[in-house]
Amino acid sequence: MRWSYLPPLMVYFAAGVSGLTSVVGAFFLKEYLDLSASFVAGLAFWAGLPWILKIPMGHVVDLFWRWKALLILFGAALITGSLLIMFALVTEPGQMGAIMSISSWYVIALLLAPSGYAVQDVVADAMTVEAVPHVYENGTPLSQEEARALHTTMQTLGRVAIISGLASVAGVNIWIFSGVEDIGLDERLALYGRVYLVALAIPALSVSGVFLHSIFQRRKRQKGHPSRRTEKKAEVNWSILGGGLAFVLLSILMGTAQVSYAQEIVFVISLTIIFYLMAQLIKELSPEQARVLFGTAAIIFVFRAVPLPGAGWTWFQIDELEFDEQFLAILAFITSLLALIGLVVLRPLMARKSIAQVVIFLTLAAGVLSLPNLALYYGLHEWTAAHTNGVVDARFIAVFDTAIESPLGQVAMIPMLAWIARNAPSHLKATFFAVMASFTNMALSASSLVTKYLNEYFVVARAATDPETGKVISKADYNDLGYLLITVACVAVIAPLVTILLVQNSKYRTAE
Image 1 (cartoon, rainbow, N blue to C red):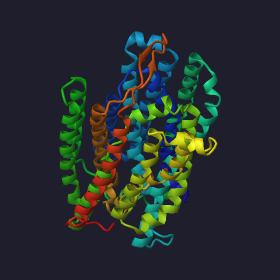
Image 2 (image 1 turned 135 degrees about the vertical axis):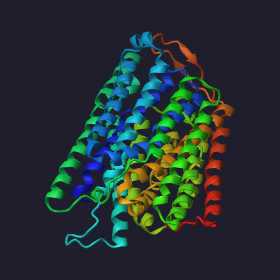
Image 3 (image 1 turned 90 degrees about the vertical axis):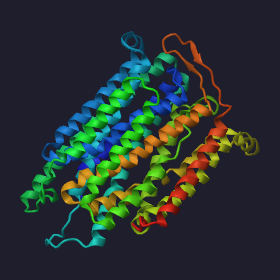
Image 4 (image 1 turned 45 degrees about the vertical axis):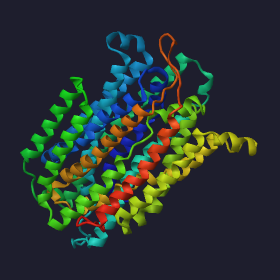
């Protein structure tokens, strides 16, 4: 740990603290909004689009690096707007509903928040490059091995900061929701409102981080150590900016015009734009580096593109397994705490092993860890509880599964981020980070689309009530959830392994 690492870590920590509202959001969605699981999965696609826009945003950061504080402030404003909308929804649903439907307000809030976090994340990624020294105290350049270790550590600490934020707010949620099962509807919604007010501290954290970064860089220059970003000034790349603008206009047009297959059209066109922008950018790399980057990105893309069960699994936990807000907060806390331990333990593995080897390990682990969820759906907890005097019940199995799974999903991106930090041209670090993040975040959009298709085929419904009248607006139906879980588990194992086999037997083979 170095003091220079602290500013970007504060921005990442703020992103982790955003998990403060995750439990509240999940319960508000499940209990009071009449939205189907397939619609929620489709909504996740639109919410993921700001992360794809990291390409033009990254280039803007490179061009206007001296004014990065303004970009952080802009992101903070978007996050604040989202939190205030959700606060109003849970405290004054009637007045908000008189202006526009509660579901529409929820969609707006859900789109504002990731837009703000994406802007801040682009700046934080570039800040990590300045945070890592490139010379020893005597001015001698670092060796390649030392540079790789430092960048891997910096990127690992970035994930640690995010997970630390998640762990912190999960602990807060455990305390907040203590005894929540004994309070009524009005008190529960008021409690949700207080959570959203407390969450307004999130944008303040990120803003503090970028100002602290400015202070550190000023002191560094005073000591005669110039910033790495002064080596070459970034020039405007109109193809990147134009492609990004075209993507924004296309997304807004397709999202508001209610065109059939709008998500699929946006996905195909945006992926084409990203491929074009990547082709322009990798001209800055050697042919060998370009091939390695392509192979690495392909493996990460497919690994992140596998489908998820969707909101139906959370609804099943609430309706059938009777998990309340406090217990879901406990699961989140265990996940975050053990993910921190896992990152520390697995950091040497990430520094020594190739990305392909890491993804193989994660894929096989994910396949094994899908079994406890299937066991819970098919009632294994009822048998185990009966034979263990109630010790090994549904909550015990859920905690055990979470404890094993939590460190695994946090490590896949770290080796690739460290590779970019080492090999990308110094004047285009933010752009390279943004390009690869946008490409791999397209995988999350693909995951949302496949999740939506599966939820349209395997229909899952939950019990929900109107927050104003208390009238039941939907009834629970989980008959197809088991088939959904089995399908998701099979795809999540087969697709990444086949991709690794193809890439590692081609000219794009990567040992990074």
